[in-house]
Length: 340
Length: 271
Image (cartoon, each protein chain N blue to C red):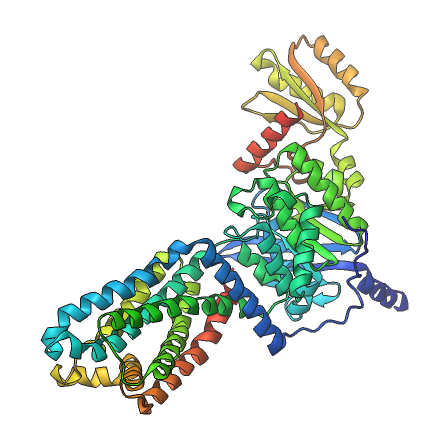
């Protein structure tokens, strides 16, 4: 009994975010269906899932932008509904769509947000200059945002979230739609942020991003958390890499798939449009056995590669169904072509 | 990035409420934002610059002879009337622009900031008083050019201008409410015109009331716009303040007292 009490007490000072059974309904659709999240202060926490999984809705509820239909959430021990104004003093939110003022310049945006946060006139100007410098936007400071690139807009958006130096920052898909170089810059910025003592809760569609940044990950699908753990734990469940095979004769597909599953002892999947067999692979050594077995059956291969696991495979392994969202498939494809 | 560490989230002394001082400061900052936006897109001032000029010219020369015998003696009647009509019509734009503004991502940030909830709305409405001031100044100037010399003198004309600007600001809360609840900007325009058109024309703004049928006179006398027009005429033409001024001010305050809270509520509900 006393031990349990102790735990609760400790928990109070440990968790930046505690969400219990969050529910949000849009009409009859349960966009978020009982989400639990625990984010340790000072860590980067990744929420991974396809479009429409409920990531943004969850973040909006935690950031006091949306009222939950069920469940509760606390930010540093403060209830998001009852103490919303306190919560707002502890968070910074960078939305999926840049939440900055299009018709104003970068400096004007930052000055207005600084003034709203209670900084004086001179102090706001200084803060704006400082942040623009940090985010490499000084040259563009006076230009209207209409001419900003996607990456510049995101950086300005993040800069705006950092004015008050909030201990918790929500980043909703911070790198979706950015080119690889800008994405790497963004990652660097996020890492430095955590070094100063912030907690970051980010959502992403890319396993690689979660892998690069997050200490812990929650995989979310159809409004539910379907897996939670450290990056290593999650990867172990998927296999460290994945095997992609395509056969010469379309008629051999079923047979080849059977052999793959037998030899690797995993579940495989077929992407129909490409006629490709995909399977998670924990042990690279097994590939030799697989190739021998395929040759033994006289199945000719047209292509074979070993790749890092993609979100599709994580999903297949965890949920038993692939990512169905059309947008997600294209995002995934463009990512693969980037890697190539 | 600065290496200064961030104060931890625990153990901060924070208040869950916003003080009146902060509310005013936040609203003024939001008003500053509104002014910057006007500066960046000066073309949105077309309506407040052209409408007073065209309407004043048109109405005076069309109705002047028929109603008051000649244009000169119609001016003291029409200028206050057209002033109220023009400036109040201008306040519709507030609702339309608010709707357009709220569809942008920046309102998400305003909602997530620890600022007074009313500030983004109050600020936008406050910035729009600039538009009313422009419309008011131009209407009086047009009147002056056409030969209008208000008996009340410059001081009372200024008071009348302030009264009209204040009442339009109050009315703009109604249109702000439409702006918050409506789905598109054009529907805001539609609803607002539907409300305002009968209100401004079924008043004493353009014609003497005694030529109207009895049942209409009853409505015109009830119409708050009539009281506002009368109050402006009293101030500009005789330099006096009467019952109409009191009713106008009370009416304006009642509108704000009703519509400001429900607008903020609707704004908070909307996601």
